[in-house]
Length: 80
Image (tube, rainbow, N blue to C red):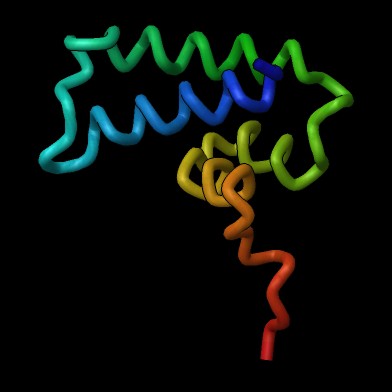
């Protein structure tokens, strides 16, 4: 499993836990635990992270970061 896979998993679990109808964060860890893990993975990726992903993580735009990892990044679509 790669660091990007780990990041994808952490983002998915965190977002699932905080969205309506999702698994409460206490089942798999607290929200603070998820945030610490995501920050740690961001630091570990360092310069290996694609620039847009690094930007999303720095700005804590976690939905956009997950979209990027899943190939649904808005920046690659034509803006017309």
